Image (cartoon, rainbow, N blue to C red; front, side):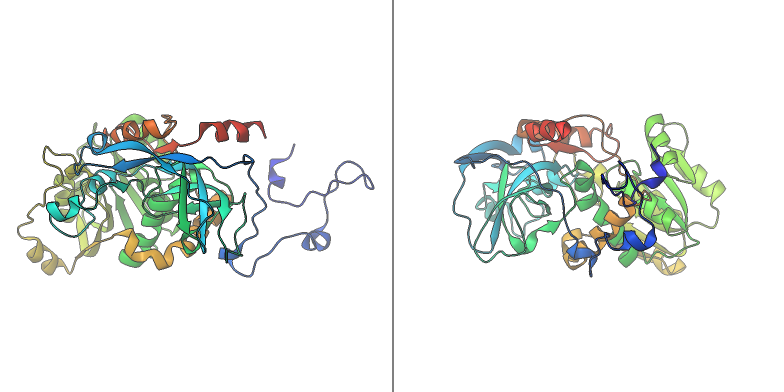
Length: 402
């Protein structure tokens, strides 16, 4: 009836009529406060079946190749009970899809030659997921069955997953928007702050801005008080970015990025959040201002060649950086795990207050069998927002009825 009341305390009582809005002094008595944002009270409890299955399905890599469909298949594994001490069993509801899934399936993130890596096969696939705690092991006192949780460890493409309780990230609800905040959101939040040293009053350029991580980068840069320039391909993606508050959207299907940057930003841009690689990297480097910082968080254009990801030479790179006091820095999220909870809590706060929007790709992917389709959709260039797979569609239907 009154959307401006969102977030306020509503007192339902027969004593003072059907609804009563407490005054500030009364409301204080009913507000739930936490001493730390990482130790919030979670009131959500999910419906779970009475019995756990004896086995479950998961996606594993059985062959090292950048072709995710050829590299993976689904296997059935026994569900080992009771749960090991200090661990929890997570029922996966949603899993996030990432461009680097193809790097993982080709063994890029493991040290050693191809022969050594083959000895690791098969291994579990998937980087991130949200779900419900289905069982807890001994000595786990801070987590309860039925509470929602997120994980960012290998093996997210599965119906169930046993993980150490220390890897559990507390969340409010097991929603697809939360999946987007994990690898994609955390990469943008931490990389811009720690590597880009982002302040306010700067010009920030984001490439592939309508994707899973780009959507977070443009909003965080804007919230920090910067002028945001974003590249994308297509009218729908451009519309999304304008809705997210981007100052200048460059649709490379209708405009030349190099010409726009040269004419409209002759002094260059202060920060580049770059995930495309190849020619786009060269273009961004040439558009960098004096003392500018270019953050490399990926190079999706180079992942899907005939022979997979091949290193590229960058002649004259050092000379360019030296003459303008510029810097180019890589960012790999696992190396900043000590900041995950802090930055995830920040995103939750921004999202809950309506300051941060989360776009989920409209194409639906249901069940583990759709994971290769989802990975290919992301790499097709047609995705917009975060690509998510609903591992358990029946749970989604249950939640829709509540």
